[in-house]
Length: 96
Length: 205
Image 1 (spheres, each protein chain N blue to C red):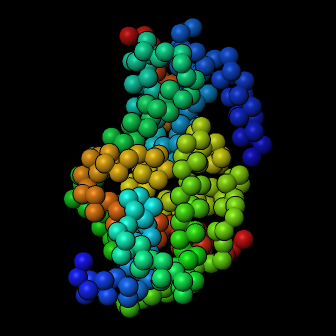
Image 2 (cartoon, chains in turn brown, purple):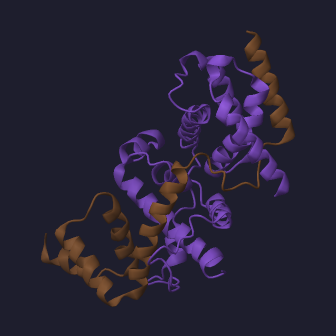
Image 3 (cartoon, rainbow over the protein chains, first blue to last red):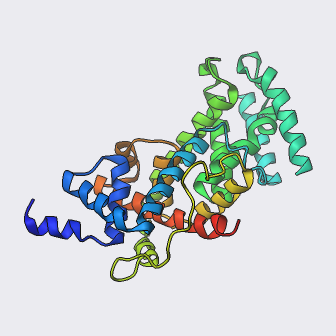
């Protein structure tokens, strides 16, 4: 990596750092990128909070998605029309 | 809420004994026992009532055609959810081919950061420890509302990758994205969702 690029990385503002933090969760970072994130996080509380929060959310969302079928969100169901349509088409399907 | 409790209670009773297709399928029972749950599953992901209902219908029809292959290894519910999941993927695949898909994504970063790339607003103070209230249905309702408002082009990526745990390679294949494009969208979807939850749940509660 050129010095110029390294300098750019180490001076990356929050928007670039958060992008690296996101990528770090999937495929990891290069050594220089990792350092850039580390040093930035030393003095930037906003980005530290951001990282903690997206890591927490990712785990929670994944567990939520894997649950039976989101019975947690119980306030919505099929409309009457759709319910009747489905019953009807299943009944027809059964006859064939 | 009272009516809902009755439904769940009845459902629980039925899936215990009635979760085997081999004894003969009663279509009215399928809709009654799984319809609402499947609908909610689809609705959370596709964010459109009509589309969600259509997908559940497609799921039932496909299940009927494949019922001989239901091997009794899993519950009827799990089996149906598996079919519905594939219907959701097919829907996203079609949707991602629309010319207008994913327009308006760039605004996400401009909303979060100043021109100099600094935070417009300090992220709230939460996240260390178990502060995401996973057991609280109210939280997931708010989450669902946030997700529903997420720009198209980001939400599909988020649902497949984050919620349903599909691999990056598969998501790229389904939505026709390059890996670089996928990571950029994922980053934006997280930025967006975190900000929304911060404002509507964590700061509000």
